[in-house]
Each structure stands twice: as structure tokens, then as C-alpha cells.
Length: 149
Image (cartoon, rainbow, N blue to C red; front, side, top):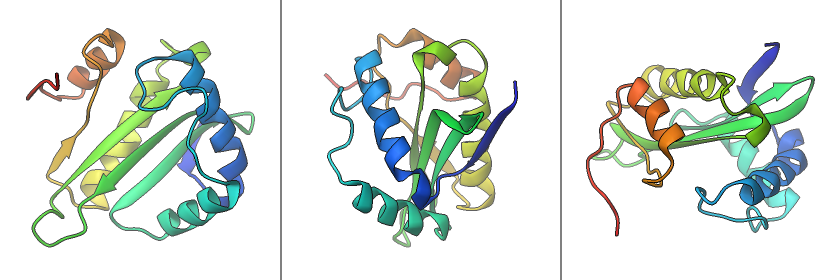
């Protein structure tokens, strides 16, 4: 498959923001649309720089031939009473759906969450109509605990 999954670097900021615009237009299952994230390249680069040294949070990018085709994020708790848990999310270009990239990103995020952030509880939110994502999460042992109306 020749895919590399690595921590996002400040130099990935522009491409990552452009990637988010693409996936925002490909799916209604995300919290943003075709405008992507509303931040500047400089703000995103600064954020990614802070993530590189974090022991509680990470932003990962999946690349093929140097091009971002997926990304994932884990955000762990910072306070003493919440540091045992965190939440995550992943996204993959529509052209890559069904190729195992989601599983690769899940494995990398769970590894970080357990072994670096030392999270005991990992949560996520998913649109209840997103059957493909639900199947992926269930494959990794996630259970439905509630529904937002």
C-alpha cells in the first residue's frame, strides 16, 4: 500500500488545511464543510508544532507519495481528574475508502492513546448514519453509549 503514517509537522499545515476542505466537501459526516477549518496556515503550523511535543495529544497524517490522504487526532485530558481519558477522530479521502486506511489510522491512534497519553478511556462521536465508520469503530471494540438528538 506504500502509506506512511506520521505525526503532522508544521510544514504540513497548508496541505492539511487544503485536505480538510476536500474531505469537508466529500462527506456530511464531519463537523465542518467545504470551508474546512477556519484558521490560517500560520495558526495551524503553530498548533501542529505544539502537538509534536505533546504527551497527551497527537495529530497524525497518512501520506502516499508525500500527499495527505487521511488524518487522525487524539486529544487527551490535561487535568488530573481527566487525564485518563481522551477523544479521537479520523478522516480519509473518499477515494481511499475501503482500502484499510481507516484501520491503519485507528491502530496508530490507539497506540498513542494507550502508550504515550496513557489513556484508559477513548471516546469518539460519529453520525449514526455513517455505517462504514461505525463498523470500523466496532471492529476496534468501541461501544455505543448514547445518541445526541
